[in-house]
Length: 328
Image (cartoon, rainbow, N blue to C red; front, top):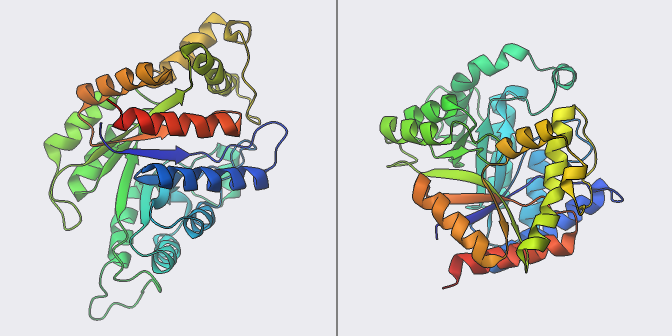
């Protein structure tokens, strides 16, 4: 099995608070470190009551301070919301505090709705300059050149590893052109996965950071002792994606016994399409699914998303998944 990593949305569930969500995420990161996961990422989202990772660099510092060896980073920072200088300073600070452990994944979506984008003081056209902003950020994290007036302090010369995130062909082409590792969001946008990976590998240009293509893909994973229990736990995710289609957002919901009583046939079709790359079941079921996915895509690493309501069940899924990757 290829290396496994975790993308944590720091979910706030019904009956809990953002503080508790952040405490649970640290607990899970510590468990993932003990189990040998490669990296633990959190993502920038705004104005979402069910996600507590809006201040992404702050959350990364919280997680890195509570762990010792696992790589911690952003999956990702939505660069159009920020100036490259500010991000270089933030992640230069993180790299200075936790050397050799920080990843910086970059996306060009705002990570929120149009009204919140306005509240962030973000120009909707800022996404158009994403390639230039990525290169500016690279320059700020590189060695200072003679005569350079603007420097990231800390940040300059620290070469924090950059990743390009994407759910379409655009990110694949940019990652290839800049010679950066590429992470595809197939855990919610599976349609272009195969073509994006093909383009990335075909057009990859070696860089100072990366000599050959390195691709990671997102998958939803819920592992439990039985297939039936895993399917029940997965209804939390299915409810969330149903609500996304309804235009409603809220706290993470507890699992239910019959998802067909919750969604309409049209909603079921839409949610199931977004959740195409989901491995749900007992350990053998999930291992088989992951092995088929890796064989089909050829990805170098998997980043797993496990939106499970109960923290103890989420920990158990994390443990069973680690065993899947090393078991016979």
